[in-house]
Image (cartoon, rainbow, N blue to C red; front, side, top):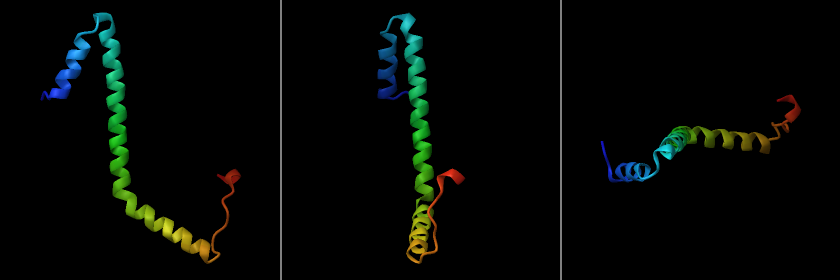
Length: 76
């Protein structure tokens, strides 16, 4: 499937000297993988956002009731 954006990217890479094309493609691969990771993270966060909000509310409630203790980072 070819879109205007992918066609433009291919043409840009094709205009580079052959010795630089592989480097450009490798950078593009890394960048695309970062975009995919970001998309997965955003989807995961969106799916669990309600649970995170509920957990934060519960933590605040427990703190307000005096049922929480400060976290000791040395115990982590």
